[in-house]
Image (cartoon, rainbow, N blue to C red; front, side, top):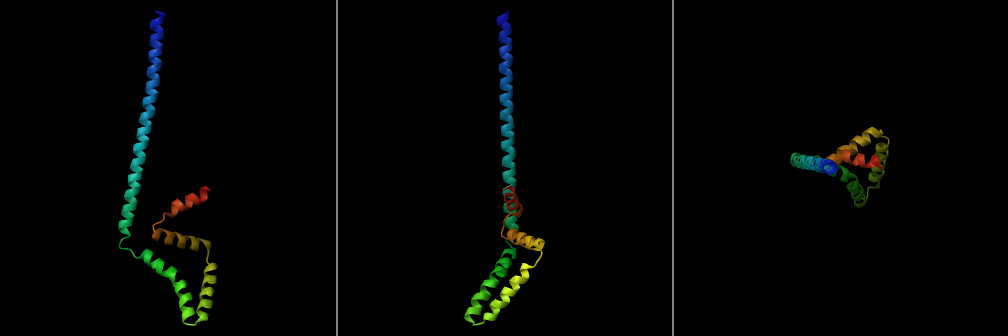
Length: 128
């Protein structure tokens, strides 16, 4: 009698352990499925964003604008126009006086045009 009682208790304990193990396994599978779906969604978003930017001149425009100061420096040297460099420096000093919010908005626009996720960069920066 005691042996059958111990057998029943042991069987019950084994069933509980099996159930907990199965629950953990199912939770892990559900989490893995969720992560896969998120990754696929992320990839789909990236692909769609890339397709929509295919006809965009935004990144080329920023590249040209950011290259202008470099071109001015070299052309002023070859054209013997040192006053162009002075004017360029005055322009950068004027840019230095712009409000911080405008600089951050401009940097975000430039970063997004080159496909950088500004939110991801900001999160990484502020987590440190």
